[in-house]
Image (cartoon, rainbow over all chains, first blue to last red; front, side, top):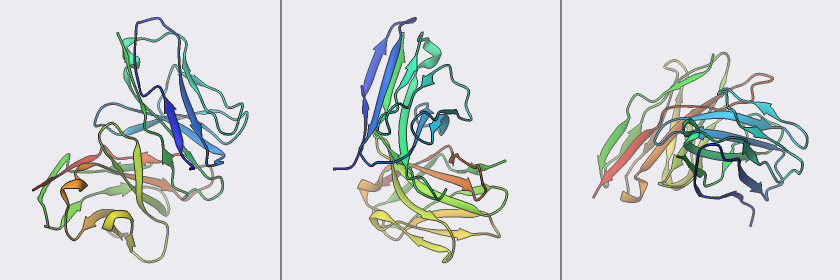
Length: 114
Length: 115
């Protein structure tokens, strides 16, 4: 079944640790996105990709980095986690082409940095 | 600049009554408009979108939305609310222009359907 997956769903980690949030999709989409969402608030785009070896920064400045080595995989990395990184991170994907193509979202990773 | 406003943080409606969740937008040029729903501890689910043409758009789960260009609005509606419709609803806009990559989301409206 075509879907978009994120792991872990929940992560509690200490300050200074390196973390990687995983995102994979089986829909064959070229475009992928990472959003940051504080509880009950709007989403802010932090990274996006048009395809393999393409990564761009979004509207909200983020200390995280992303990579796109395979079409289906778009991991997000924080080299040194801080309490200010506590948030929910949502991954999404969409088809290339028309900018009105809807985005499909994963279930999110809720990150807490102590 | 693109933006979306959802003027109501919270909407309460009795089960069986019609519901409306409001959204207004600001964008240069023609907009593409979307509604998403988010259930607790879940990602966003696409409900419907407006691209062009008929101002009344029908989507999933009996929801519909009406595009009003003069009022720059895209309100979400349902004729008869269900308790299971209780969730967080997000309106989003993307401008119809080359290089516009982003969906701009509103702050969300929490819908509570009271049994």
